Length: 452
Image 1 (cartoon, rainbow, N blue to C red):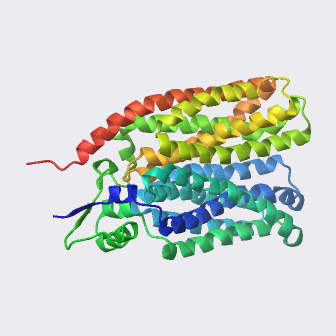
Image 2 (image 1 turned 180 degrees about the vertical axis):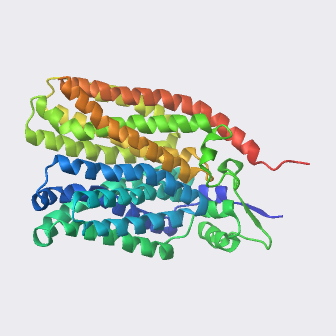
Image 3 (image 1 turned 135 degrees about the vertical axis):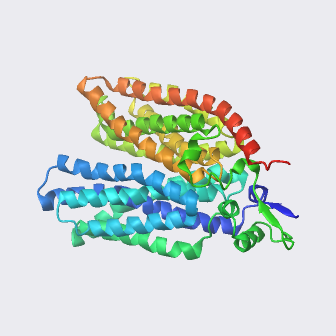
């Protein structure tokens, strides 16, 4: 029987217009996701004025989407591994669109809080499935870079609500943020079933979609000869149909220590990221720099994350997962030096940019790395659960900053404490590399058909 190895077909394919078309639509999905992450923050000042509430009262509303993300990422990750990446992405976008649009008609904080929680469920579902879809279509030599590009789409989308707020809110009021934020993902979600296919590797793993797989296979290799009765197969380490969609698969057949280490790295790095996100402008000001320098430092930190993330994606494609351990180790002195008292304005701004490369950039690298670590059978679940569990770090990071503030710690201590996270992540990455090799060998052996 003629076997066609789809894993090798995808891995070795040249970059084709199909890949760019897929990247375009996935980037649109990620930008819609990023838009809705921050629209409540842009609407916040107008809500305070119209509803006569305090700033503190809006705190739970801002946190509600994070809580929804915590639940939504694992749920839609399961949906993606069980029923397909495309249906999970489309469902997430439609859910975001409906719930965000409804926010425009909220009449009090309680209604807005619950609607933002529901929006967060959908927000958690886009990233893990976009990462999985791109991991299963992109040639191996460009895979991590493409996944990081997708993650950067969140930052691009997060920049849009500010422009909408400046141009439309003065005329239409705060509801326009949620109206626009609901229409965009809903329209993209309606279009995506017609614009992109489901993952070719997922369809092979699931079975019963031979004609669709054959059409996509010829996209990768137009000269491919597919004989009658040909069988499409994957490499043994891609997993099996038996584990597809099962969250327990993250803890079976040697995957438990891998999953635990991935989760720990996500928690630690998101903790460091959100600590600096919340406190960096204030830390710069309390170190003797101006308010403008504090704001500029915050912007450079995010810019560094985008630039650093793209660089890390390229390095992952070139050197593999071992680069994570090296880069986490490099991040430690970068963060420690950023906290050095008495730095000039110029040096401090350069170091905040490099800190963004080291922390935000490494989070983009971790998102891509999780997509590389898990096989097709577990990929959306693996990334989804890592992102969901990682929200623990997102919440605890700012709280650690509050504790350090209450203890009247100098700004340098904030950076020294933050540097502990990449130090521990470097150790986790070293352990992960050794464990992953053993787990993949065991999984490949289990996936091999037994001989009579």
